[in-house]
Amino acid sequence: MRLHSMKSTLRLILWAALLLFAAGWLLAASGEGDRKQALLLTVSDAIGPATGDYIIRGIERAGRDEAELLVLKLDTPGGLDSSMRDIVKAILASEVPVVTYVHPAGGRAASAGTYMLYGSHVAAMTPATNIGSATPVQMGGGFPGLDDGDSRPSRSDDRNGRNAEKVESADDATGEDDAAVEAGDKSEAKAKDNDEARRGETAMERKVLEDAVSYIRGLAERFGRNADWAEEAVREGSNIGAREALELNVIEFVAENLEDLLEQLDGHSVRMAWGEKVLDTANIEVVRVDPDWRTNLLAVITSPNIAYILMLIGIYGIIFELSNPGAIYPGVIGAISLVLAFYALQVMPVNYAGLALILLGLIFMVAEAFLPSFGILGIGGMISFITGSIILWDDPDLNISLPLVFGTAIVVGVFSIWVIGRLMRLRKITPTIGRGEMIGMIGEAREDFDRSGRVYVHSELWTADTTEPVLEGDRVRVLAIEGLRLKVEPVSDDATASIESRS
Image (tube, rainbow, N blue to C red):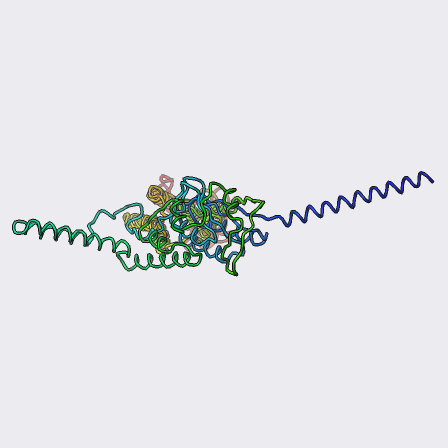
């Protein structure tokens, strides 16, 4: 009886311990789920398709996890306009407040980074960082990699020179007055020159500039930031540091580190698409989200030089597979490379005229091996290939390395002409094995026949057809093979000797 009572007591203790453990686990899980989170993304490179994919997926994750906010730690020299606009669209549509924080000290939010900072719900910077230089790069114009902005005088410089000549010619008559006129002309020319720099010199430059100004002013007005300085950063490429940005109402906070920023954000009200939200960042958990393999892969294949090389590998892999069916390896490697290259071309601003010139250049260089053009096709192909490679990308930030372009053009041209020419020469060589080997061989008739009889060729006895009478022992030449029968013709002893001497 006493033993039974002890067992019952032990069971009750075990059940109570189990219930307490379950209750504690549920409470811990509930507390874990209710704990506030801040997702932290880090961008420390140029803004491109890979960066855009990383940030947009991070914003989507923050929405799914119902995070309190998302902090984008930013240090960028700028990047693609298309990727920047995709990021800003995602930020504006986000259900979670996005805080863009220029960090670490010495970092910057230049060019595209300025637009991203202005388009965020909260803008913050670390001391010793800067923001600005938001002028569209296309305003520079010129050949990629070359700066010809100072190589030719502007219209205002010409006017300045002409006015100076006029002043000099009248110098003897009015010395002091001419100096005043010259100073006035210079100041007027300078003002006009500054106005041209602010507005753009061509219609296309003005369109790009005015579009960028309107875009960044709209972002500034949405979040109550300094729109005038934003326009100045676009038109004149102005830069300011963190403290000055705070004074000019370009940003909301200057923070030494992330902990300092989160402390300042507590209780701050932000404007969302659906209304106002007050941030609660006290004791918030920071969850770091690093770029995954997908982002790293995108960063590699969307590099202009890598995409360019993948495209060439893909094109030549397909060419070699078509010229030698069944090789398999060139076709497989070429198909994979071409798909990756097409993906990279799809996510980057491609100039299709450049792509067409590259393909045309490759066709010309391959055709050089087939047609007697005396080098015209080869030279034209290299020129087309180089020109297409240089203008392949519409964005100046995506220039391909010029040494890579010229080196590849030379290698591709020489390789194409040599390989295709070698293949053509191989096709003209007489086969040494198989049925084709017997064409042109000399045999001996083993009987007299007018139309059909037996001949001895290649150590084998064949049935042969002829259009001329053949006597036993005569020499015959194989003209063709039709099934298991030969077509032959009689040959003289002189022709036989000539054939044997050549062989």
